Length: 194
Image (cartoon, rainbow, N blue to C red):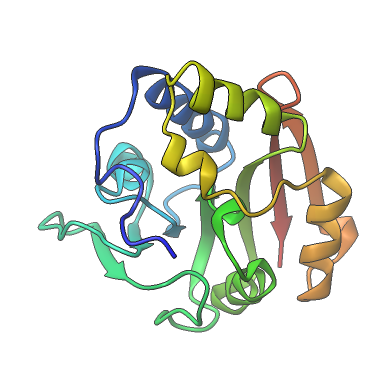
């Protein structure tokens, strides 16, 4: 079981580039002035910090999170494999960037996303595809240019079909879901409206 959040320890330059690529991908899909939850926000809630000018408020959730004095961002420490200490039907948007692959209980995680989203709210998720597994393992274990600890912690790799079926099980309808690949087919970009 993990004991640290992403970003709590030093990250490689390549990991920072990949993270910014994911953030850029999701930021154009945000509605105006949303109340947003970032599940698996990392130690410093970087996505929420970067998105602060575009959001009403944000809550970052992870195992370990720095506290914030910024009036727009609140941090909450919680295990994403369990039920989250967040209100029902509260958030306009839930983002989760490269998180679900680390979880022992992705079904409960998706259930929690559905629970905390307002009706009409949207989840925006990225996760590595099965195609990424050998590439990530090569970069981590052979070249040592990304975190071996992070890659060794991957429990699942999701295909588009897998992620759609998972979110259907918790109440999202297929017609309200969109899934594409990016980063040369190595990552999924998934959105779904409640």
